[in-house]
Length: 115
Image (cartoon, rainbow, N blue to C red; front, side, top):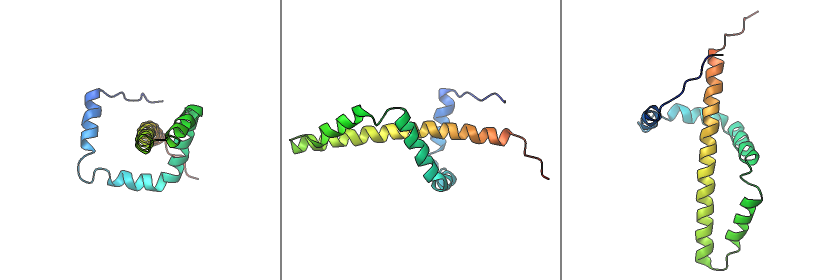
C-alpha cells in the first residue's frame, strides 16, 4: 500500500485558498450532486455513530422549542441550527477526506485484467 501524504497547515491553507477561484468547485459540485444520496447516507450514519443525535441533542431540541419567551426560543433555535450546521459540515469534510483517500487508493490500484 502506498504511503499516504501528510499535509502541512500551509499546504492546507493554500488548497483552501485555491478553492475560492471562480469555477474551482464546478466539477466537484457535479460529482457531489451525482453522489448526494449515497453521501447523505454516509453522513447520517457518521452523525448517528458519533452520538451527535442522541439524548443530549434531543434535550437541546426540547429546550429550544419549549422556551416560553419567543425571543429566547428564536435564539435557542438559531444556536441549535448553527451548531448542527457546523457539526454536519465538519463531519462532511471528514467524509470528504476519506472519500478522497478511497478514490486515490482506487487510482493507485492496478486495473483488473480484461478477459
